[in-house]
Image (cartoon, rainbow, N blue to C red; front, side, top):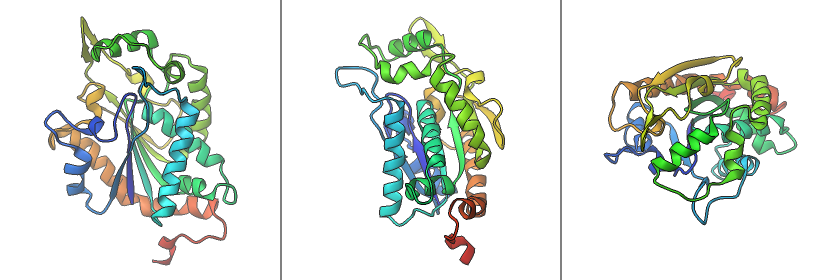
Length: 273
C-alpha cells in the first residue's frame, strides 16, 4: 500500500510536513504505526511569489501530478497497489482535479491513469478550501505572514476565491465520484497569527464538501500551516494517524470492486491470494 502526501501553495515536499523541532512525521512517526506502507511525498512548483513564481494553473498542475504518479507506479511495478492520499490546502484542490481526470480515463485510453482511480481507497483533506476563501483577506494575511510585499501568482490564486466558478464546477464533478472513496475532512481549530492580528485561512464551511458521501469530519487543534506538522505523538497526531491506520487496514479489500468494474477482464492480484 502507498500513502501519498501533497503540500499546498508555497509548500515543499518535506519542509511543509516538518515541525519546528525538525520532526517530519511522515518519516519519523508514521512508520512506527504503519510499518508496511510506502510513504511518498509529492512536490510541485506552487510558488505564488517572487520573480520565479510559477505560472502554471490548476489544470496543468493536476495533469502533471496524475502523469508523474501513474508513471512512477508503472516504473516501480506498483500500479495495482492501494492508494491513500493526504492533501493539504491547495494540494487537495489539485488532487480532486486529478481524481476527476482519472475517472474520465478509460481502461484502454490512459489505463495507467485509470489504475490510480481503481487503486484509491481513501483521501484525507487537511484545510482544503473546497468552497473557496475570502481571497483578498487571505492573500493579505498570507503575504504579511511571510513578510513579503511582492506580486502573487494570479493563475493559481484566481481559482480559490469565494464563489469561484472553477471550484463550483469541480464540486459538482467530484461529488458524483466521491462515493468511490472514503474521505476525511480536517479543519483548523486555531487561527494563524499574522501581523496585526490573526486569520482563519480556511473556515470550516469551506474545509468540507457539502453533499459528499462516505465521509467524516473532525477538527485539529492547529492553525492552517500546523495541520500537517506534528512534533510528537500528541492527541492531534493520533487522531490523524489512527484514521490513516483504519484506511490502511480496509484498503486492500476496499478497492477490489472498483478494479473489477474499471478493468474488465483484468484480475487484481488480491483476488489470487
